[in-house]
Length: 329
Ligand code: 13P
Image (cartoon, rainbow, N blue to C red; front, top):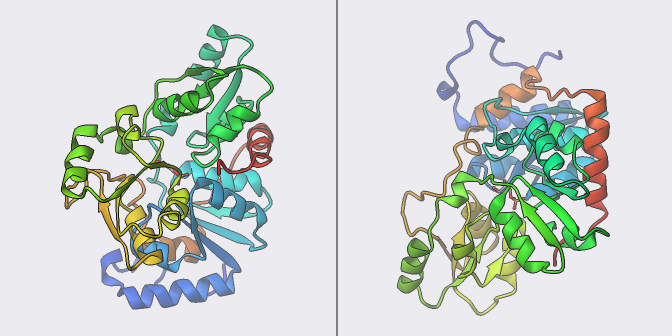
């Protein structure tokens, strides 16, 4: 390892909170230059991580960026399945997840074994797996999708019978958009989105009757039914641009997205859909990565994503097949 650490590895390192933010930012900037690293961050990350990233985006945008980068190292500020996807799409690069605790309960809701059982129950169906899944589950799937292309992916399939996994709300939303397909939907949810009820959204809307409602398709059906726009997180930025005369927007997704929206559209007002100041639409995993984690990740080259070669090959097939399909809009 090159001599880049201000603090010795292990013993003697001060607790994370003792390192001033300006110092952390200076270290991260130096390390990314020295190591030819690219920092990718999801739209739900804490503001300071979004602000230091080379690229922020939704799952599809980040996967595309990971595939095209010529950096030697990818520091992925997101959750585990996203860093895995970056490794699968660019296996020669070293990919690091700065905080190993950053998982995804939706991705954990399906295993290769439970997918196999399900496939046996529905023979002859094409398996469409949301990117919020492990590499092993992707490897057992025919094609992946993200919230940005799920409708187009299902529509593009030559087969009429589809198994959609693991997100129930996204799967049901896609099934409503593509009625010509028979879509069997797995019973997983993202707890962060599934917690929002239409009653809360309606109350927020009553208080802001002029507002445009933008919802993520991981929200429940009654919530999505109230929305003027349903899209991926990056799709929300485009959706705001489509409403140049609207001043206020109600946002039904994880509250990290509000930072990205406010940064891009400082003259508009963005309100969390549950109308709660603290915001209940909070993903604890997406908030685990701080600047300290990113600094030590770059400095100590941790935590590296390592995957079995066969798993990479299988998952890559499903992801690359998805990449050939355009975004929904
Ligand atoms: P996006 O791909 O829309 O950013 O969604 C990611 C996600 O995990 C939503 O919970």
